[in-house]
Image 1 (tube, rainbow, N blue to C red):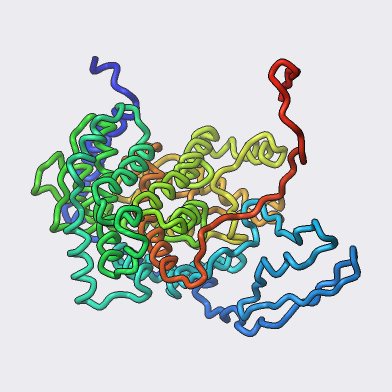
Image 2: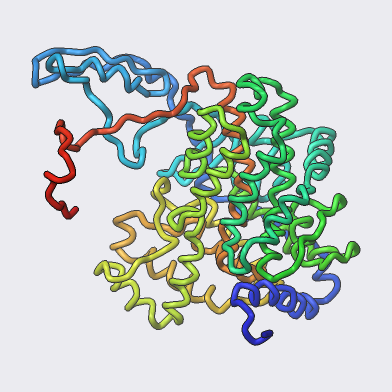
Amino acid sequence: MGDMMDPKSAAANGRLAMLAAHISALAPAEVDSPMIIDASFASTQSLAVQPPPPKNLNGSLTVVDERSGKRYLVQVSDEGTINSTDLKKISTRKNDKGIKLYDPGYLNTAPVRSSICYIDGDQGILRYRGYPIEELAESSSFLEVAYLLLYGNLPSEHQLAEWEFAVSQHSAVPQGILDIIQAMPLDAHPMGILVSAVSTLSLFHPDANPALRGQDLYKSKQVRDKQIVRVLGKAPTIAAAAYLRLAGRPAVLPSSTLSYSENFLYMLDSLGNRSYKPNPQLARALDVLFILHAEHEMNCSTSAARHLASSGVDVYTALAGAVGALYGPLHGGANEAVLKMLSEIGSIEKIPDFLEGVKNRKRKMSGFGHRVYRIYDPRAKIIRKLAEEVFSIVGRDPLIEVAVALEKAALSDEYFIKRKLYPNVDFYSGLIYRAIGFPAEFFPVLIAIPRMAGYLAHWRESLDDPDAKIMRPQQVYTGIWLRHYMPLTERRENHS
């Protein structure tokens, strides 16, 4: 039976042995020294003082409808937006319902006004509450960044201590949820487990459900804050239990004396030994990755969280929906695709043929290009440096040579330059996760854990938004206008 171990279980079981082999080879001074996150992370371009977006864009547009000859005045806000419902008045006849914005994928639609995250894809800028991501990755911790995202400012020393204590106090997960995780199939995908467990938290905390306690429940700051620390505390515990399920091992109780990232690694690797302490350099590397993945504006999963929250549903159900969106291979699973691509390329010598295949649309290039960024993803620059730090501890992944050479070749090729295709956050992150010993199917979970902070920040902001409405987009109907019911015996077969 031992020879027939599931590949996922084998990968999870092999993690400890792999790390032990690498780390035991290091001198004690190397193991104990913290990872140095130096200023070379910072991008000169993104940290340069950029003028803020102009705030005096208000005015009006005069729209001339050449179909009817009518003129319409549409007001423009200070931020340069128009109210989409103002377009409904542009109509040609009685049965014309007015102009709608057809925007598949919401390429230029802003359903919310937010102060949490700022992205300038043309300049390669990412800021949390005004702080450049480079500075936060260099100097901050994940829980400090989570506080910033949620409450708008970096905490004082006293506030941070209280915050860290509150999160750790809520890190235990109800035994019923751990039992459900253990009852899952051995080959259950960890993201499927995470979605199920986060949703199930709603059943274990009925005190947090507006459907049961009234729609005004979340007007209470105390109630909101309790759900926030619950989610942040329990997310890594659930994730660790899902990982251990892959190895056929029971969940490990969290530690209250370790940092957020250290505690997560402790639950994965300690085998219940309470004196075990994770390698501090790897814990710091994971903390930086958590900071980089904590928030990214109105992406697919964050939009899903706000969409669900607009109905008044409890926070756990809203977050479960967001994690479900992150599960998708076009979103949270992208770094797994990068590893697969690099493995298929195999060696530096094969890169030219691969790039030709990409240009001829015969091969797909993962980890390059981004819906928002038209220049180098600022997170990718940080992660590339971080990869070298991690490899100095656990050994150099041979695929990093392929990755570096592929990046260099692509960025010197006119085809990719013209299309503004640069490495994104997924290009190097999968290599780091693999080097730390995680199986590829666990990569999306490592994004979901820190992204809870971003989801919760948007959930909290939406509760105070005076313009918030239940999200109910329009559609452009293209179906049959009208037909009448026919008895079954009179119908012909249709093949569609």
